[in-house]
Length: 435
Ligand SMILES: [Zn+2]
Ligand SMILES: [Zn+2]
Image (cartoon, rainbow, N blue to C red; front, side, top):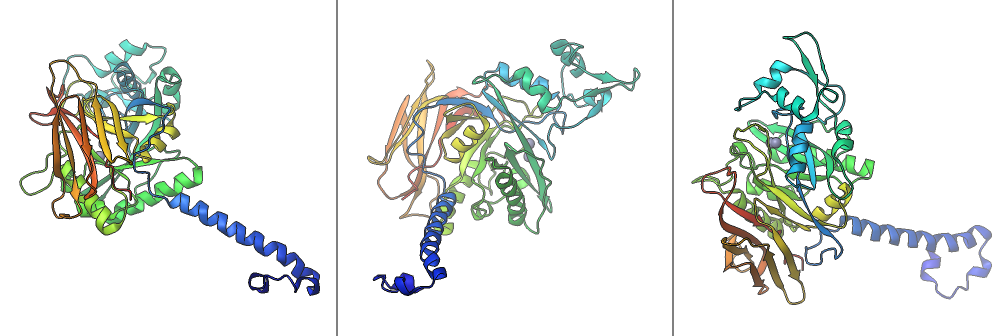
């Protein structure tokens, strides 16, 4: 302690040897503590306000919520991957309920066929037609035949291509508290995660998120989690979503028709939930807002209601690699879509201008709403600040906004709507919240 208070150095000559060593060791320790403090602060830093995006990059289209025969989907994982790649997706996460596509799994053909909702050809017939007998593996007697589901590791080499198509390992951690489903997708996992349960909705969310964080740190890989379909069985309230600040993402759009996307007379829509939760986060919990993802949650691949291709994310990343995509999304460098393509999403912190540019199609009109909550009227959540028609839209922040986000809606009906009168849309992430 003397060394810290005495700056003259006059004690130095009289110190016995151990104290001389201490004179070197203590400043080194102080330096080490300082470095650790900086590292800790960096690690704890909330996600960046998406104002300064990585300059070098490209847009990558992906779906992070997909089911296959590995759980309750009704087609083979390789057939599903084939479909998404053919449709021009750059990446796909197969996210079955509480299971990874690993290990040996055989299914009776009768069960495979039973999963079909519509269609005149058998699931097995389609599978054989597409991949042939060299790839498809069956066993057993006629009448009690079984087929083996391919693992992710078997599927990868057949479809993955550098910079063109990537598969990311994922799981829908499917938990519940009482009658309330608590489903969280974990993207880029390295091991399966068992649902952790809890004594409330909030605790159930927290316990599962804690397991993901533990795995992410232990394996040294970024894992993205998104809270799924909050209105499914009216399970998750905006207050709960706001409170669990460990979660950074939720589904602002999920293509499953049964998830109450629009809310009802008494309960808020997914978009309204977003604004309520983000207002609470910024004002009460002093936490960053949630980012909104759009997904398919596809289960049916031969017709049927829960079909693929309805919602996706467009991620601005330096490369088509799982870690880079996850980290770009954690920084908020993405938008969500159910049909609209954006050329640019910009926020200039200096001029405080938020701008979106739409890859417009002819004969289609686009309406951009800039939505947020004002500091001066925080009870009015999700106020529409401005509505602009055209293929470019800009909003100049006044300084009163807690945050601003843009939602673009086209005049064109959605190709495969999940609710009546659905239009194509795009959702940008909240900006202007980082002071
Ligand atoms: Zn779910
Ligand atoms: Zn699902």
